[in-house]
Length: 157
Image 1 (cartoon, helix red, strand yellow):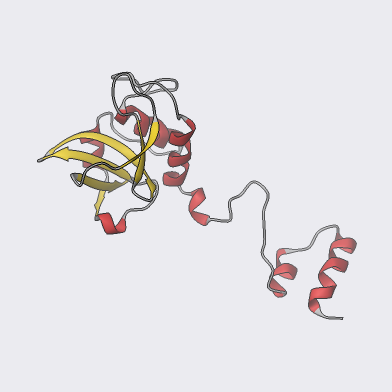
Image 2 (tube, helix red, strand yellow):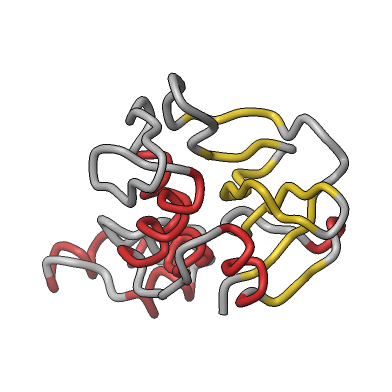
């Protein structure tokens, strides 16, 4: 009997296979409720999921949730729920993050829109050139393609 054939009998005898037994035969370990992607456990990934869960929430200047948001209110709310604190405004948030190159950006990083040295908008990078953000009065939280090259990236520490 091969090691592969023994795993089902281990399951029957023990009621479940151990991770060691599965790993020994080259299988995968799947834990219910946990993503197979280790990054899903990071605060940045959690913040991204929280922002996405607010899809359709109306924009309101100065709002920090849970039902209405302005741009920095959405990022502040999302990271707070993920266990990280951020200051209130987009510019303050930029100053608190670790600045990174576009080539180093990852899902969950913050995207800061600027004119010269003035940061005027922020969203959470979702990958593939898109961000979750709360754009402006009359709009809602949504996923949108980054529309300009005048952006800087920051990683929440």
